[in-house]
Length: 226
Ligand code: ADE
Image 1 (cartoon, helix red, strand yellow):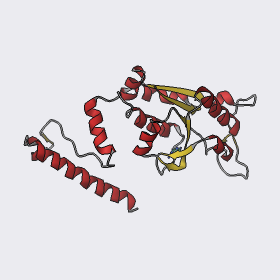
Image 2 (cartoon, rainbow, N blue to C red):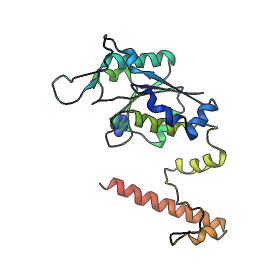
Image 3 (cartoon, rainbow, N blue to C red):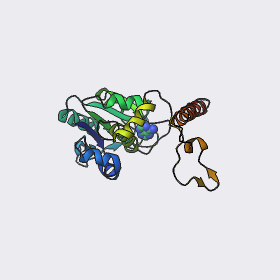
Image 4 (cartoon, rainbow, N blue to C red):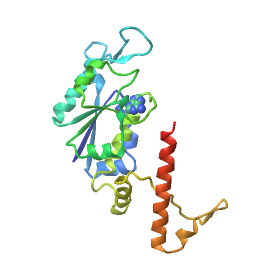
């Protein structure tokens, strides 16, 4: 079974997304097991503090190293082969290929920070630093949930065979999906493209391929030109 551990100060953040839709199905079917470890449980002072001011001054607070490293060591104790990923905007970019790589690992641990970030001395205890995009979230939890969701849906048996066949066809090439339409045939004056109503499957497939390639080219250009 796929075993993910989440190190966080807010385990309740994950309750709702893991209780819906595909993640819920995967957990109920015992395909995925997700456990949270509360970082605060590893605080070492009597106030159970997890953050402190940065040396050298400046705004914001940092996560203290002791509770974070304590939580990482607990995750490694529970699963000695786990791959520990720290979520941070300064990490390497998360991609579909990374999701595919992670689900092949024996286990994965996602470390979520709050405040201005982590004390740098914890990095020796993690295997990888990962970002979900060039923007700053108020904590690693939404980033960890993106990573977790994208992994769970790739686990064998989670999606039905029809859904996973669609997934395969564009995961492999890094090509975006084609545009989709359902009923009604005309919505606010906008018609479903004729080709999709033609019943000609070869033509439909060709059209979809062209649309997907055009989108992939156009949208990737838009992001790389800024
Ligand atoms: N924590 C805050 N922002 C983040 C981001 N963009 N990716 C990963 N972790 C984060």
